[in-house]
Image: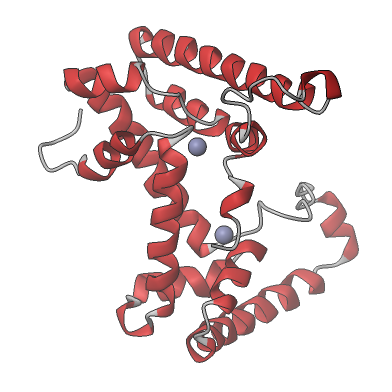
Length: 230
Ligand SMILES: [Zn+2]
Ligand SMILES: [Zn+2]
């Protein structure tokens, strides 16, 4: 159980705003805060420096940090990380070939995502906490439960996160029901979006289908392609 000092405000705020996945919106907001913190060199506590030296950043966050324009701050962090990386590679590549073959094979990293990243690591830890907060609020705050059960659901990934954080069956059932209803809703809206391209449907009303594609992508991948670059 959580103690009294749990910070429920960000979760309450995100769900008050609504949308196809309030936790995605909260993640985007938190990510923007962390990007700023990582570049504000003076607030980088030693623990964060150690983490950056060891992990570096994934492609997405390197690109975002680069775009933010503080090239000196990023260069300082990247330089110490690069030195540590070279030392690690030197050691790894020096291993005799035979030993390397005997060592457990590490799965090949995908071309994007899953790269070691100091920012992803912090963000994931925070989002796990927010998923637990969502569960705690659902169980302890009647108003929140009502809002959650009447919401548009979450994206698939955050549904899984909330399911992983809810040990009891009551919320599990509610989340699954809510999510399947809303995935079917978006599926129907997306279908109508495609049917609107048929000339016979040209004059029929769009209903809610006009932005069904970005909303379907958000449900599936946690990103609204229309927000990209903003
Ligand atoms: Zn989400
Ligand atoms: Zn990252």
